[in-house]
Image (spheres, rainbow, N blue to C red):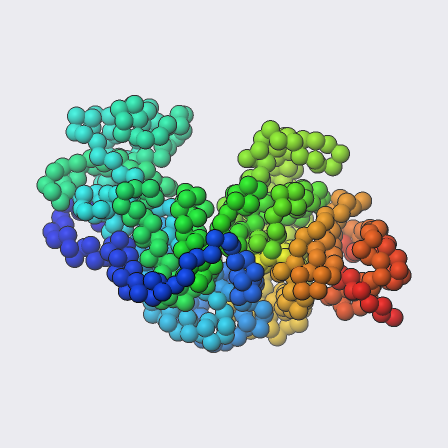
Length: 593
């Protein structure tokens, strides 16, 4: 049980402070102070292209999902040989530092420390960049929080921690035996707000409020106090980013220093839950240190206004799932048209397959704009009505309690019961999703769940057979030219050779078949037009396109290397796609027989 249950037993404060993030931050900042002083000012503009040149194909590994043998295998060069050969340029290691998403320290978690140095060397040797997380909006139940509750130094300023006078303890909930805190009911929170303790309006009629009250704590100065504090989840304390000491910002700054200078990180993921002013400051700080920042802009405006170098694509995920389930791409087209209307460069986006973003099924843009009208087929629908319609259509197909992995969703979309009998069909559909994201400008990100085709949340291993996965281990897949990994390798090679990551979205043409989506891009390196066409329906489809930019070009199917039939001087192009298939076509200003 957490140290707080015996917090009154703390004898000397000094030894405990050495374990705190705030103390570690001071030490890290002092260590690199002279190096940082020599750096030029941070660029006020995102360095998206530089980030893409460094790493535009990411592989995500949640260390907490690995078996012990799997982590040990990461120390071997062979894993990184496979990943590099596959086309991976950056690896996103989640939960690398102490506490994971809810930090308790700034260093590598002790459970990964034995072997981390070998992993870092192997990554560096293969030219694979490290992507890691910054401090989040909350910490775990850390030493810092213990010291804050003991009212030591600047630690209380690190959190939204408020002392309640003893005569007002009657408004605080009783803490159950064996617990150290209890949630404050909204009616009592309303009273505390009126008395000036809670600096925000409280939301009525919610089961749990965002504030907890502690038990009586004997503090370092001998005074017995009860505190209330802002929290996430059941009890994780939220950082106060705008306190007079700026302790939260100091910890985040030192954490970034440690990630870039000590661990060799290149891209730092900033928690989208922290305030926008803190996100902007962190983005500048990361850029100053020579790294790149990643944020998750929520909704169209959130994506447009982020100051990070690259931004998670939080719009197209639910639309891609919808296209897979309903064989209709109108919602997916809508999202890309919104990018065009807002002037968002899609090369700034990180298209992530898995793990699923928390907003994947929220239709966030529609949720944030319930009264705005959106063009959907021939109708103008409000965001609220359109969202409800799409959610209903998804629910009919997906049902309840289904596992949130793409292989599972592919199984549902194909209406199959047996993974073994339909392994090939599921694999091809899964590859189609990867093809759709990989052939677009921006960063393509996939995970260990994608690479192994996980069906549940069991621990996995890249190098050994893992139960409940659709695909074999990496060594097994590299021996089979038709495996998911080998076919993905071909897709990523075409992406790399044509530098799709730096392209520009220029049009989203109308299509006759609702299951077909076509995206037009202009490639930065050559100025040539690239067409991405994907048929999400389970029947063959065709489409005639007529555009002046097609004149005096020869369309080349980049996956086959063959020319598509078209008169050189013609402005028309006929596309034909089999069920659940995609084509990427380059319009070359040359004549090929």
